[in-house]
Image (cartoon, rainbow, N blue to C red; front, side, top):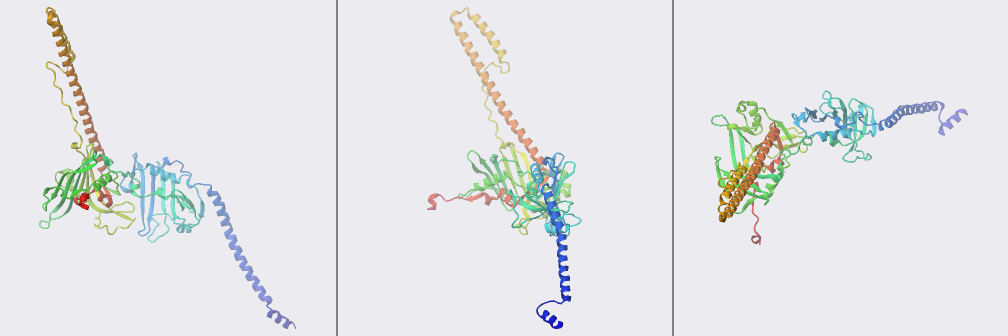
Length: 560
């Protein structure tokens, strides 16, 4: 009966004691696993909650409290494809801000550096994301360390370091990926949520940060107005459209400069009439001999393009610089010893500038000369094309004419620019000196008072002598007084004109001195550098004949 009962119970779905014990063990094991996992997670969650509460009350860099103490900024980025680090640095050296990454080119960095430092001052921690070094790649906060990064490595962040004048580190931050989750609230004023960590520490934070303040773009850190001129003060332009190359003569094998000139135009601008006029136009034959030309009956100056050129000069931006070789004189002409310096000559030639006789030089892609009303004249020589990488570093290879090979947002095509300033007195308006009135006979401009005393004495003697002649005495005295008054008035007018002419001449002489000083100051700025302008800027400030001349619009009656 027992056996029958057990069989009936199993058939009804019951478990044998052995199976019940097995099921109990399995359930107990699963429970222990769940309990262990929960016990393992609970401290982490509790710790993170406590850390979060603690850290949220803190700022990233409490030691960085005064932006004025920031004396240097270094930003190191990582190129994933080439596994190379791209350092950018701005530092105050000898009282001047410079860019060491660009051969110590002067920087306009006071406000920019203050803005970068201010971005980190009192920057609050929003959240603690992780304490595990294994998460650094996930959040993009691996430090760009030259000894550790490798090709194909991912998750490398950008290092931002700020130091004071003594070299003390005020802030070292690794900026990682942006938190792009839909639930993540974006910051205001260009800020976004970023994963970051303090260099040397494992903890990863989430902060609200404006990364634009840590720009490594060259032109964000320099004086943007290269020439420092007002377009409204431009009075003359000379547009020289020519090309020049350096190569070997096929017959002799000697190195020669080949110049191919197309046109040269001198133009003047009348600011009162707001109008351009053609002063002189030259074309050149196949032997580069000039021939004077004039506009055809159906041609006129392209005033809009000339105005665009003038305005572009007032806001000429550069995208890179390269230091020139030593051996250029104060007026930026090649000194005698310069021609024998192979390295210096090669440096010029690589960039499209060739030293010639008499210390002058020619350029591979023409010139633009700008004459200002203050007597300062700018000479812009255009050299070879080049490319500038995203970090603002020019290459020496000539860029393809069609710009092929340029990678958008990674590099830009441009052209080398050699700038010189010089004084041109003909640009100044000569003082209009008034002619001097004739000096009265017997008058001495240098001693008018003594002369007057002598004449007074003579008049008195004449009066005394005429006392005996009652009828003519009064008339003679009157005539003498009138003559004296005329002579005195003429003498005073002459002295007034002399003083006014002297004032005009002194004013003109001050203009000359001011222009000469400005030329020296400008050449001090230009002396050490080849500049690079973008192709867009180059096309604006270098016009050939076809660009500066246009067909006239048909008259109203001709359109009908």
